[in-house]
Length: 619
Image (cartoon, rainbow, N blue to C red; front, side, top):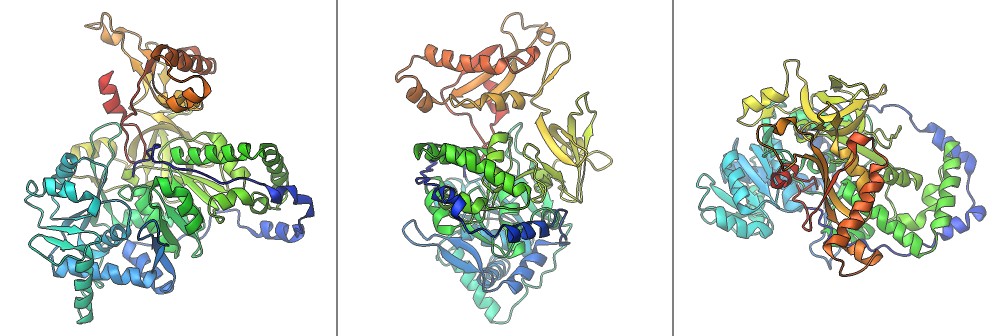
């Protein structure tokens, strides 16, 4: 789902900090805490060596059969309903059987489109375990783009959520190659091309009861094309990325070396499942470890869902992390406990430096607002303000960052939980080689990746594949950054976004955008090089680009802090003063010379990346 701030409801309770006020009276066994801290491993953990998704899924179903696997609320008023690992495996096998025996979809392509729900998980796993090629599609796409991707993928079936029913009606007569339309949460029996997912699962279950176990015994070739994911297209039109089981399994093998997840852990699913970040790290990874997954109902229900599900880990994007940080700190200030929190951060950091960690006890009120059990927040997909990550660590939450792309399914680097590094995008995964191409004097250049998580190639586009994967097998990511001596990756920009000045200087817009976004008056911004309007003609390439900031103001904040009913000129002046403050922190050639105000939000992908190329078509 899109992180639409208008739908985002983060109403946290009062922060009393009574635990901090009674700090001196606490009966804390410091010696034991220190001993336990010293026992913790400080290096890479033993990693798994899976070859396919089916391998680790069936293993977990056997080991954790009666344990909670997926939790989902039937509706907002009812409690979370739990599906165990055994029940999930039964449903996956039943759906897989129904798809190949009833609908004849073996080795065919099946589109999955809809919001996060149990039917999505079952459908995706059934495809990966032997049906054919899964094609997850962004549910936020308009129906004409959905139609386009269905045709491009050559899909013969569509599994869709009830909320996508209207879009399916609009395209069904235009996608003649689609043999079946399968609706999630529906018990409808097979009727022509239509069938309910529940009905298909029940039919498959009966076939299995009759003694047919063909689906469960389908062998999986780790190298076979099994997943087609269309990129979000932030810098160009969406490409189809071909993924195999080995790519996905190697993601699991990579993370297990750096981050420990336990069967007692519970992940909170907020992000859209069509994206590899959520479907691989937020679904397949916890599944491989026997952990459970609680589905968030939507942005307006984040806080009550957190408090009911009590997750230990959240995968998210910077926009949501920063809003959680902001809202909690607002609650702290309203409670007049900001000085207490600050002093306790200093005290608990000192204790932790000698192996004694009491943060969860001291900051209990903050944890209670997040469900009480949170220990990990993972942020990826975009840069984040370092102070946010540092603050999370200060209150005792492991703040982990990941780096990768759809083309690496998605992980290429991840922060080890035993050696955190706020500001980096993570440490190169143990199976991969990441290097910097043609680095400048600061060591920055294009990030190149060679990894077993790397895609098979772009779907029906050998030319584009050859452009990004060189003869040595390195993927040219398009990201600009550097790698330190310990293998930690730092991303400073996108090569397609780089602004090259007339005297050859490179300016990475992301660096400037990060500074601008620290101002609450600015809701969103893109920085680019604008060609002067005059004398463009033949001399266009010889003219110096004007460093320009296109800003979406935070009108709600501006009205509260300044005045209501401000004229456009006044809003421009307020933002321009903030821009000038940022310019003071930049070298002269990076300084912003022109400000453009945009009243509407930028068009974004479902992981909240600005579709820059579309926005700048209007420059």
